[in-house]
Image (cartoon, rainbow, N blue to C red; front, side):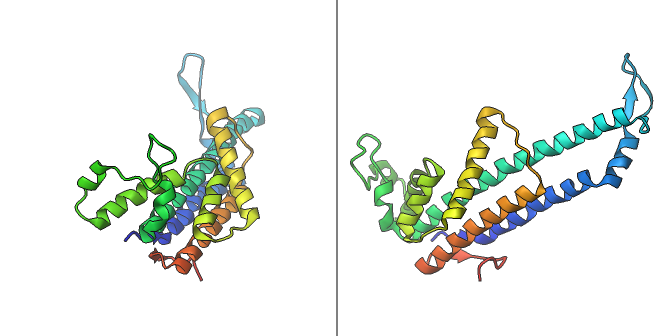
Length: 233
């Protein structure tokens, strides 16, 4: 039976933002910035290296430091993409564990692709290509989870609430939905948002809260759960 590995996601939500925060703190440290500005080389019009960067020229120095800030801003926006991806995969992982533990709940999420009204559909090929019931259940759990995890974020959360009979905090849903919308604008509209360390910390805490809520469901529904980092009380 599939185990919902909260420990894995808890670790990712500690280490990935941790690496980001270390770099952010370094880039924004004024002493580090001044040392960095002294190390840049400049080139003449022919492309030959002429001398070390003249860090006493404030205009030139600020140009280079602004480039450093822009690179950090791009990284901050990429963190939004990473954390949004975590949400999508966490929910997929949870659905798979949920369906594998309670296979009777898969019915609605196994449609016949040629007939939307036919639910609980399993094709003969899938049955014949599995060795036992547990293997079949595992395959169908992934298939049902993929179907349940389609659509807008709010529609997916409604399915989660319906299946689990667990009510999520509305503020949490709104915050995570805003994150997903921001991610979509970055990806599909080439938008860049003013994002700093504080915003990323808040996003991480929201994803951790989602993980905590899913863990509560696992405990209440007796779904196999691994919490190696002790995220849950």
